[in-house]
Length: 551
Image (cartoon, rainbow, N blue to C red; front, side, top):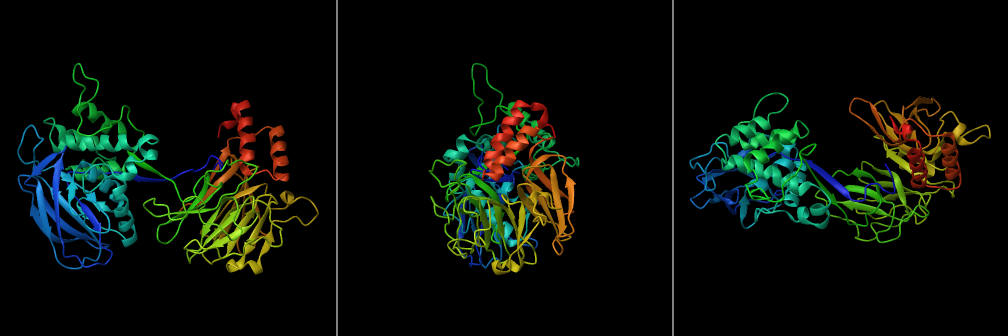
């Protein structure tokens, strides 16, 4: 990851699926439910009468039906239920007569979905927008009309729906319309285009509108959807599978009339070109977040990341001075707006962020040359100078906490590894140091600006290098048993281990660099240069020698 031009805003990327089945999920967090829910079902902005509306409670088990009714001629409904639901409430509205339909009559393919917050709003609108928002956020938990999953996952999914759709008005959510997402992402156009395509089936803009939608949304398995809900789920779960098929429906359903320049769609804006995938990314910022680095998630789903710089400062490579940021699962900043969480010796965190079993955050510093520790509320637990072991540390980068509670961190400047058994700084040890008077990079570990660190299922530590094309591996129980492997790339940064034990490394460079540039990078490291300064040198080298960029 490019630390200076890295993640400047936290993006939440969720996927979408929609259908003519309306599902409103409302998390009650254990509170007794006795109120009635009033709402209206709309299609393309007009009412849907005679739609069957069912209230369900979702949890890890099969959903439970709590109430059922039908919309009136004005598309409105009232649901009354008693009891204490043990999970998420959601409403399914199926079928009905769409006032905007040219053909009239009941449309059994209608199915719209909407997932809400902690309690029912005073009035609920269920339409294509709330459907797209709800299916997109809940796609992994939906199977047809059944919504079920783990409690935390369902709560996080429900909490993100308002980012996309306003359940009370049926319009865009606040986050979708903010300055970041309305102008700097394609999300609004993706969202409205999908809503327009669903509306085409809901209102049957053409005789074959629904069959056309089902054909365009057919997944790789070949099993075609049968209503708008299953169509939406298919699109969400196979977002990159032939996305042009769904996009083509926009012109099929809403061709530009002669003498006009815009399509007569129910919702604006719409896409001009087919997307590479039907995804709806959102950008988040605040909480002292700028020049972000590695993101880690705690047991509540909150995201933590170091910020390279202080918000509003003239951030530059000569001084990294940022702190620690936290975001709720719905993207709301939880850390102080300008400074983030401070203290504990933290100054200019790089790529080192880790969370232990007690939701404590371990984060190390570049400029500060320390390792710091914060509790789950953002309070510094490390001393004001951090853990620096008598000033022995250089610029720090990767850090991990193993399942056994041990902490491993990388000294980027000094080409070595810091080990704190059970997270105890007083018991810290250094590994990968040279024993013959040569630089540490000449030790058996062959570390050269170590950057990313990970542990696999066999308790083996993996370390990549910002300068070089190798990855180092050794057993956590015996760091002397070192193995070094070529990566096939150069300047390893991010690293992850998948569920089958494969190790993935992101490389800043491709095949390598010229000798002159390697020497310049070495000089930068030895004189205190940061990873960003090295990236600038490497970029200049690649621009001068394009052939080196191939992987």
